[in-house]
Image (tube, rainbow over all chains, first blue to last red; front, side, top):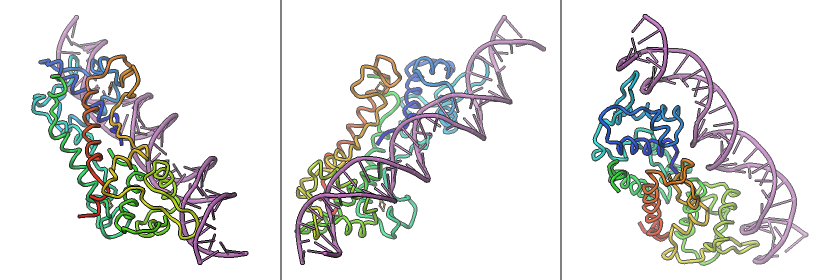
Length: 135
Length: 135
DNA sequence: AGAAACTTGACTATTTTAGTCGGGTATATA
DNA sequence: TATATACCCGACTAAAATAGTCAAGTTTCT
Ligand code: FES
Ligand code: FES
Protein backbone atom coordinates (compact mmCIF):
# COMPACT_ATOMS: atom_id res chain seq x y z
CA UNK A 1 0.00 0.00 0.00
CA UNK A 2 1.77 3.06 -1.17
CA UNK A 3 1.07 6.64 -2.00
CA UNK A 4 1.74 7.78 -5.54
CA UNK A 5 4.43 10.32 -6.30
CA UNK A 6 1.99 12.97 -7.46
CA UNK A 7 0.42 13.22 -4.05
CA UNK A 8 3.74 13.09 -2.30
CA UNK A 9 5.25 15.73 -4.54
CA UNK A 10 2.20 17.92 -4.16
CA UNK A 11 2.59 17.93 -0.40
CA UNK A 12 6.33 18.47 -0.72
CA UNK A 13 5.93 21.39 -3.07
CA UNK A 14 3.24 23.06 -1.00
CA UNK A 15 5.26 22.59 2.15
CA UNK A 16 8.17 24.16 0.35
CA UNK A 17 6.05 27.15 -0.54
CA UNK A 18 4.63 27.46 2.93
CA UNK A 19 8.01 27.33 4.58
CA UNK A 20 9.20 30.33 2.58
CA UNK A 21 6.41 32.51 3.93
CA UNK A 22 6.84 34.61 0.82
CA UNK A 23 4.68 37.53 -0.18
CA UNK A 24 4.96 37.28 -3.94
CA UNK A 25 4.56 34.34 -6.30
CA UNK A 26 6.93 31.39 -6.23
CA UNK A 27 7.96 29.83 -9.52
CA UNK A 28 7.80 26.12 -10.17
CA UNK A 29 11.34 26.31 -11.45
CA UNK A 30 12.55 27.30 -7.99
CA UNK A 31 10.53 24.57 -6.31
CA UNK A 32 11.87 22.10 -8.83
CA UNK A 33 15.44 23.04 -8.00
CA UNK A 34 14.96 23.09 -4.25
CA UNK A 35 13.00 19.86 -4.00
CA UNK A 36 14.52 17.91 -6.86
CA UNK A 37 11.24 17.34 -8.68
CA UNK A 38 10.92 17.50 -12.45
CA UNK A 39 9.56 20.87 -13.59
CA UNK A 40 7.17 19.36 -16.08
CA UNK A 41 5.83 16.95 -13.55
CA UNK A 42 5.26 19.82 -11.16
CA UNK A 43 3.28 21.59 -13.84
CA UNK A 44 0.89 18.66 -14.07
CA UNK A 45 0.49 18.66 -10.33
CA UNK A 46 -0.06 22.39 -9.99
CA UNK A 47 -2.64 22.36 -12.74
CA UNK A 48 -4.81 20.25 -10.47
CA UNK A 49 -3.97 22.22 -7.37
CA UNK A 50 -5.05 25.33 -9.18
CA UNK A 51 -8.28 23.80 -10.42
CA UNK A 52 -9.13 22.99 -6.83
CA UNK A 53 -8.24 26.46 -5.71
CA UNK A 54 -5.42 25.40 -3.46
CA UNK A 55 -3.05 27.73 -5.27
CA UNK A 56 -3.47 30.74 -7.51
CA UNK A 57 -1.30 31.31 -10.54
CA UNK A 58 0.29 34.47 -11.78
CA UNK A 59 1.44 34.21 -15.35
CA UNK A 60 4.26 35.88 -17.14
CA UNK A 61 7.71 36.92 -16.14
CA UNK A 62 8.27 36.94 -12.40
CA UNK A 63 5.11 34.92 -12.13
CA UNK A 64 4.51 31.76 -10.18
CA UNK A 65 2.05 30.41 -7.67
CA UNK A 66 0.79 31.58 -4.31
CA UNK A 67 -1.13 29.63 -1.72
CA UNK A 68 -4.84 30.38 -1.73
CA UNK A 69 -5.11 29.79 2.00
CA UNK A 70 -2.93 30.20 5.01
CA UNK A 71 -1.09 26.93 5.73
CA UNK A 72 -2.81 26.85 9.08
CA UNK A 73 -6.07 26.50 7.28
CA UNK A 74 -5.19 23.99 4.58
CA UNK A 75 -5.98 20.39 5.41
CA UNK A 76 -3.97 17.68 3.74
CA UNK A 77 -7.19 15.97 2.77
CA UNK A 78 -7.86 18.86 0.40
CA UNK A 79 -4.58 18.24 -1.34
CA UNK A 80 -5.24 14.56 -1.81
CA UNK A 81 -8.70 15.28 -3.06
CA UNK A 82 -7.31 17.66 -5.65
CA UNK A 83 -5.11 14.92 -7.06
CA UNK A 84 -7.92 12.36 -7.14
CA UNK A 85 -5.85 10.34 -4.75
CA UNK A 86 -8.87 9.05 -2.97
CA UNK A 87 -8.35 6.56 -0.24
CA UNK A 88 -10.12 3.56 -1.65
CA UNK A 89 -8.67 0.48 -0.12
CA UNK A 90 -11.99 -1.17 -0.68
CA UNK A 91 -12.51 -3.81 -3.32
CA UNK A 92 -15.99 -3.10 -4.59
CA UNK A 93 -17.16 -0.13 -6.56
CA UNK A 94 -18.50 2.19 -3.96
CA UNK A 95 -21.86 2.85 -5.61
CA UNK A 96 -22.36 -0.43 -7.39
CA UNK A 97 -25.12 -2.82 -6.48
CA UNK A 98 -22.65 -5.66 -6.71
CA UNK A 99 -20.00 -6.55 -4.21
CA UNK A 100 -16.32 -6.98 -4.94
CA UNK A 101 -16.73 -10.59 -6.00
CA UNK A 102 -19.39 -9.82 -8.57
CA UNK A 103 -22.20 -10.96 -6.35
CA UNK A 104 -25.09 -8.94 -5.12
CA UNK A 105 -24.34 -8.81 -1.42
CA UNK A 106 -21.51 -7.04 0.32
CA UNK A 107 -18.68 -9.38 1.11
CA UNK A 108 -17.62 -10.40 4.59
CA UNK A 109 -14.79 -7.87 4.69
CA UNK A 110 -16.63 -4.90 3.24
CA UNK A 111 -17.12 -3.11 6.53
CA UNK A 112 -13.49 -3.57 7.42
CA UNK A 113 -12.26 -1.65 4.38
CA UNK A 114 -14.81 1.02 5.01
CA UNK A 115 -13.45 1.46 8.51
CA UNK A 116 -9.89 1.52 7.22
CA UNK A 117 -10.73 4.25 4.73
CA UNK A 118 -12.26 6.32 7.49
CA UNK A 119 -9.26 5.76 9.67
CA UNK A 120 -6.85 6.99 7.00
CA UNK A 121 -9.00 9.92 6.01
CA UNK A 122 -9.08 10.99 9.65
CA UNK A 123 -5.35 11.37 9.53
CA UNK A 124 -5.47 13.68 6.54
CA UNK A 125 -8.40 15.63 7.89
CA UNK A 126 -6.54 16.44 11.06
CA UNK A 127 -3.25 17.46 9.50
CA UNK A 128 -2.67 20.98 8.31
CA UNK A 129 0.06 22.11 5.97
CA UNK A 130 1.35 24.28 8.78
CA UNK A 131 2.03 21.16 10.84
CA UNK A 132 4.72 20.15 8.39
CA UNK A 133 6.82 23.23 8.77
CA UNK A 134 6.62 24.05 12.43
CA UNK A 135 8.56 21.14 13.83
CA UNK B 1 -3.89 4.44 -2.28
CA UNK B 2 -5.26 0.98 -2.57
CA UNK B 3 -4.74 -2.42 -1.11
CA UNK B 4 -3.78 -5.22 -3.46
CA UNK B 5 -6.09 -8.11 -4.07
CA UNK B 6 -3.80 -10.64 -2.45
CA UNK B 7 -4.13 -8.98 0.91
CA UNK B 8 -7.83 -8.46 0.52
CA UNK B 9 -8.42 -12.03 -0.54
CA UNK B 10 -6.28 -13.33 2.27
CA UNK B 11 -8.42 -11.55 4.82
CA UNK B 12 -11.58 -12.65 3.05
CA UNK B 13 -10.52 -16.27 2.97
CA UNK B 14 -9.42 -16.33 6.58
CA UNK B 15 -12.61 -14.64 7.67
CA UNK B 16 -14.50 -17.26 5.72
CA UNK B 17 -12.64 -19.99 7.54
CA UNK B 18 -13.13 -18.37 10.93
CA UNK B 19 -16.83 -17.89 10.44
CA UNK B 20 -17.33 -21.60 9.88
CA UNK B 21 -15.88 -22.43 13.26
CA UNK B 22 -15.07 -25.83 11.81
CA UNK B 23 -13.15 -28.55 13.58
CA UNK B 24 -11.51 -30.21 10.57
CA UNK B 25 -9.65 -28.81 7.61
CA UNK B 26 -11.31 -26.56 5.07
CA UNK B 27 -10.39 -26.98 1.41
CA UNK B 28 -9.43 -24.09 -0.80
CA UNK B 29 -11.93 -25.34 -3.33
CA UNK B 30 -14.75 -24.63 -0.92
CA UNK B 31 -13.41 -21.21 -0.05
CA UNK B 32 -13.01 -20.50 -3.74
CA UNK B 33 -16.64 -21.34 -4.41
CA UNK B 34 -18.01 -19.49 -1.43
CA UNK B 35 -16.00 -16.32 -1.87
CA UNK B 36 -15.66 -16.26 -5.64
CA UNK B 37 -11.87 -16.22 -5.68
CA UNK B 38 -9.80 -18.18 -8.19
CA UNK B 39 -8.60 -21.44 -6.73
CA UNK B 40 -5.12 -21.11 -8.12
CA UNK B 41 -4.80 -17.60 -6.82
CA UNK B 42 -5.85 -18.79 -3.40
CA UNK B 43 -3.13 -21.40 -3.55
CA UNK B 44 -0.53 -18.68 -3.99
CA UNK B 45 -1.94 -16.79 -1.08
CA UNK B 46 -2.15 -19.77 1.27
CA UNK B 47 1.39 -20.74 0.50
CA UNK B 48 2.49 -17.53 2.15
CA UNK B 49 0.02 -17.81 4.98
CA UNK B 50 1.36 -21.26 5.70
CA UNK B 51 4.97 -20.11 5.58
CA UNK B 52 4.12 -17.53 8.22
CA UNK B 53 2.34 -20.10 10.33
CA UNK B 54 -1.04 -18.44 10.09
CA UNK B 55 -2.58 -21.64 8.77
CA UNK B 56 -1.57 -25.28 8.83
CA UNK B 57 -2.08 -27.55 5.85
CA UNK B 58 -3.34 -31.09 5.76
CA UNK B 59 -2.60 -32.79 2.48
CA UNK B 60 -4.46 -35.45 0.64
CA UNK B 61 -8.08 -36.21 0.19
CA UNK B 62 -10.34 -34.50 2.71
CA UNK B 63 -7.42 -32.25 3.45
CA UNK B 64 -7.38 -28.50 3.56
CA UNK B 65 -6.25 -25.77 5.88
CA UNK B 66 -6.91 -24.97 9.50
CA UNK B 67 -6.20 -21.76 11.36
CA UNK B 68 -3.10 -21.93 13.51
CA UNK B 69 -4.57 -19.56 16.07
CA UNK B 70 -7.95 -18.73 17.40
CA UNK B 71 -9.44 -15.80 15.45
CA UNK B 72 -9.52 -13.88 18.69
CA UNK B 73 -5.79 -14.01 18.77
CA UNK B 74 -4.91 -13.30 15.15
CA UNK B 75 -4.11 -9.68 14.39
CA UNK B 76 -4.70 -8.43 10.87
CA UNK B 77 -1.19 -7.01 10.89
CA UNK B 78 0.11 -10.58 10.90
CA UNK B 79 -1.81 -11.33 7.74
CA UNK B 80 -0.50 -8.29 5.92
CA UNK B 81 3.01 -9.07 7.03
CA UNK B 82 2.71 -12.58 5.63
CA UNK B 83 1.87 -11.19 2.20
CA UNK B 84 4.69 -8.66 2.25
CA UNK B 85 2.06 -6.00 2.03
CA UNK B 86 3.98 -3.62 4.15
CA UNK B 87 2.56 -0.20 4.70
CA UNK B 88 5.17 1.96 3.12
CA UNK B 89 3.60 5.18 2.01
CA UNK B 90 6.95 6.79 2.40
CA UNK B 91 9.04 7.88 -0.55
CA UNK B 92 12.56 7.14 0.54
CA UNK B 93 14.13 3.79 1.13
CA UNK B 94 13.73 3.24 4.80
CA UNK B 95 17.33 2.31 5.53
CA UNK B 96 19.07 4.35 2.88
CA UNK B 97 21.30 7.26 3.74
CA UNK B 98 19.69 9.25 0.96
CA UNK B 99 16.29 10.88 1.04
CA UNK B 100 13.53 10.37 -1.47
CA UNK B 101 14.87 12.99 -3.82
CA UNK B 102 18.33 11.46 -4.00
CA UNK B 103 19.83 13.95 -1.61
CA UNK B 104 21.47 13.21 1.66
CA UNK B 105 19.01 14.79 4.05
CA UNK B 106 15.51 13.69 4.84
CA UNK B 107 12.98 15.69 2.88
CA UNK B 108 10.52 18.13 4.42
CA UNK B 109 7.69 15.59 4.36
CA UNK B 110 9.59 12.58 5.66
CA UNK B 111 8.17 12.69 9.16
CA UNK B 112 4.67 13.02 7.83
CA UNK B 113 4.82 9.70 5.96
CA UNK B 114 6.36 8.06 8.94
CA UNK B 115 3.43 9.17 11.05
CA UNK B 116 0.98 8.02 8.43
CA UNK B 117 2.52 4.56 8.35
CA UNK B 118 2.23 4.32 12.10
CA UNK B 119 -1.36 5.46 11.97
CA UNK B 120 -2.30 2.77 9.45
CA UNK B 121 -0.36 0.05 11.21
CA UNK B 122 -2.20 0.91 14.39
CA UNK B 123 -5.41 0.01 12.68
CA UNK B 124 -4.18 -3.42 11.69
CA UNK B 125 -2.56 -4.05 15.05
CA UNK B 126 -5.80 -3.47 16.85
CA UNK B 127 -8.05 -5.52 14.62
CA UNK B 128 -8.46 -9.22 15.19
CA UNK B 129 -9.87 -11.69 12.72
CA UNK B 130 -12.64 -12.34 15.22
CA UNK B 131 -13.77 -8.73 14.85
CA UNK B 132 -14.80 -9.41 11.29
CA UNK B 133 -17.24 -12.15 12.05
CA UNK B 134 -18.93 -11.01 15.23
CA UNK B 135 -20.86 -8.07 13.87
C1' DA C 1 -6.14 -47.60 -7.81
C1' DG C 2 -8.21 -43.35 -8.06
C1' DA C 3 -9.72 -39.02 -6.55
C1' DA C 4 -9.17 -35.09 -3.71
C1' DA C 5 -6.40 -31.59 -2.37
C1' DC C 6 -2.10 -29.33 -1.36
C1' DT C 7 2.82 -27.64 -3.68
C1' DT C 8 5.52 -24.93 -6.56
C1' DG C 9 7.75 -22.46 -10.29
C1' DA C 10 7.13 -20.11 -14.41
C1' DC C 11 4.70 -17.36 -17.39
C1' DT C 12 1.66 -13.43 -19.18
C1' DA C 13 -1.85 -9.91 -20.20
C1' DT C 14 -3.39 -5.82 -18.36
C1' DT C 15 -3.19 -1.79 -15.81
C1' DT C 16 -0.99 1.76 -13.36
C1' DT C 17 2.67 4.75 -12.57
C1' DA C 18 5.82 8.15 -13.30
C1' DG C 19 7.15 10.59 -15.88
C1' DT C 20 8.63 13.16 -20.86
C1' DC C 21 7.61 15.84 -25.12
C1' DG C 22 6.17 19.55 -27.61
C1' DG C 23 3.75 23.15 -28.63
C1' DG C 24 1.20 26.69 -26.86
C1' DT C 25 -0.23 31.66 -24.11
C1' DA C 26 0.39 35.61 -20.89
C1' DT C 27 3.10 39.25 -18.85
C1' DA C 28 7.06 42.00 -16.89
C1' DT C 29 10.90 44.43 -18.11
C1' DA C 30 14.68 46.35 -20.86
C1' DT D 1 8.33 46.22 -29.07
C1' DA D 2 11.44 42.35 -28.42
C1' DT D 3 12.53 38.92 -25.40
C1' DA D 4 12.82 36.13 -21.61
C1' DT D 5 10.28 34.05 -18.06
C1' DA D 6 6.79 31.29 -16.51
C1' DC D 7 2.31 29.22 -16.63
C1' DC D 8 -0.91 26.05 -19.71
C1' DC D 9 -2.21 21.62 -21.44
C1' DG D 10 -2.92 17.52 -24.32
C1' DA D 11 -0.60 13.48 -25.92
C1' DC D 12 2.56 10.05 -25.53
C1' DT D 13 5.56 6.22 -23.46
C1' DA D 14 8.82 3.15 -20.88
C1' DA D 15 8.87 0.65 -16.93
C1' DA D 16 6.93 -1.52 -13.09
C1' DA D 17 3.35 -3.66 -10.53
C1' DT D 18 -0.77 -6.35 -10.45
C1' DA D 19 -3.71 -10.03 -10.94
C1' DG D 20 -3.95 -13.60 -12.31
C1' DT D 21 -3.22 -18.44 -15.38
C1' DC D 22 -0.72 -22.72 -16.62
C1' DA D 23 1.50 -26.91 -15.97
C1' DA D 24 3.40 -30.48 -13.62
C1' DG D 25 3.90 -32.32 -9.66
C1' DT D 26 3.22 -34.85 -4.42
C1' DT D 27 0.55 -36.62 -0.58
C1' DT D 28 -3.10 -39.02 1.56
C1' DC D 29 -7.88 -40.77 2.13
C1' DT D 30 -11.18 -44.26 0.77
S1 FES E 1 -15.33 -4.97 -0.42
FE1 FES E 1 -17.38 -4.33 -0.75
S2 FES E 1 -18.29 -6.22 -1.28
FE2 FES E 1 -16.24 -6.84 -0.97
S1 FES F 1 10.25 10.65 2.35
FE1 FES F 1 12.11 10.24 3.41
S2 FES F 1 13.40 11.75 2.55
FE2 FES F 1 11.56 12.16 1.47
